[in-house]
Image (cartoon, rainbow, N blue to C red):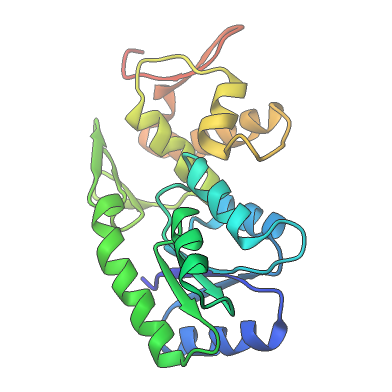
Length: 229
């Protein structure tokens, strides 16, 4: 499965050049022109890496990098900063903000691809090698796959994150607001009832195998993942 790369770049010519290079290198590409659009895409798609321009409309790349690293849901995602600022102090500031690497414009597509692959080699083992199993329900973060009795289960990205959170935090009740903070992120502003919608979708997906009963409603409190039915 091709790794997803999020390009956050407001100059169309540069964004297109990067996209062409990434597609040729067999990466899947997602694009955003500003930090707000990028934050929405981060939550929905969970890319393997972010290519982040320093100068963005609205929030700067530096501010956005800090925001990515602050959120529990996105803090593990590596960042490569792209900028015309080549001074030593600029590089230090970028790395201090949370960037894993720093490329000065102009750069060649070959250098970009090499840097991306190097960062992914360094960072992916820290976030990938986890398999969680509960009564025949298996979630493999390395392959981003869910298996039920050796058959693949298809979930949307939000339902996947919700199930991952539940399976790694069993037997505890979480309110809707707590789930929004832990699964969606504290900077994503959606109504608490949105949680109910995704809980229903998750239960529907788990119903054929009978695992929907583990996603339990606790009256006036929230939701819990428990094998004690």
